[in-house]
Length: 405
Image (cartoon, rainbow, N blue to C red; front, side, top):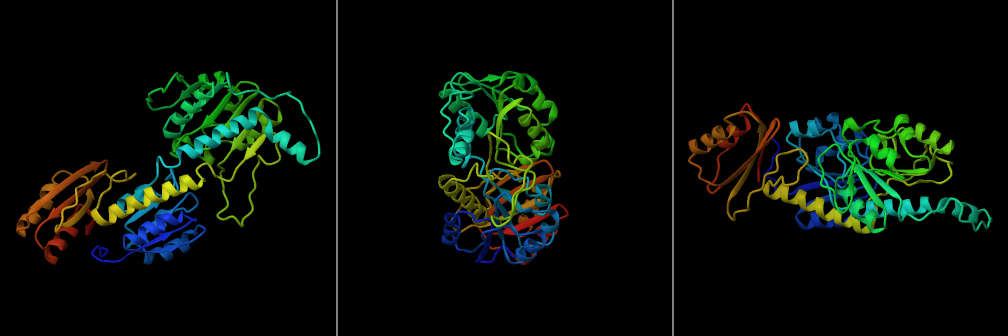
């Protein structure tokens, strides 16, 4: 068992996470080391021997091989929406709790989508290139208002639903498709299938998550099903779209334009070269995964995730964790807090409490949550504990990790 009673925690923040996160962690007593770029698997595993908490964005890959070499690591903060760069199953089985920022950059992504839809519809990309080349081409040909056009949203979660509202405010007709049962906002129309949406929309924009089932979601069949002259945007995940097929449909004139913010392979740092099959195409906007890259969003993300990590380390709160049962217990002054993460089998809570009873320990408060194969118990006790009690809790057959706070 890692020594959870150490008074000093260390946090490693990679990928230029907003400095506000580091300031908040330091104010909570953490030693914080910040680095601008990502680390490869070997470097990350080597560094994590010295840290309790890891903060990353989308470039760092936290694999099972990294996690099995990081016994000190307690929690991971993904300072972004997606967590597919983290092996969540491996983290869970080692009692490492993962947090993300599911809401903080929603507005920034939506505003970029709206800006790109307007830019593509007005063909501002072409006008800009012509002006820089010295050509004055004052023509309305191919330029349209967004008002009255049909916006098709694939994925109606936090981003898709907010985009729906703003799109409708611009005068667009909104339709959406989602595999989950989502409540339509405003006058948005829920489509019965992806094919129905593609045949209806003038603009198709993807806002799906990083689950493996979405790999290759959009390819030749889907682009062929889109309306002639339609626009395509992807600000979700790079592996969702076949860029070769997209290029063919842009070059053939079937699609009038596209905007892409995410790619199969993205450079690990700003000093590395970027290449894509979509480069050099007219009326195509390529951006370097900046959907959530505004000062406002990054500040909000830094504050949100840092607070989650602090609460977790201090009190064991797993509220809004992406891989653990969400459990919270009010902090009690003078109490000792124990967090027991275990395999979810019948009778574990009774066995834990029997150990407390054997050591004549009074329980001041307790909360249990289970999810899938994992159970999570926070217990506040009023009396001191013995090494024997901790040893028995640690070596229960079902124990994944015990934290003594």
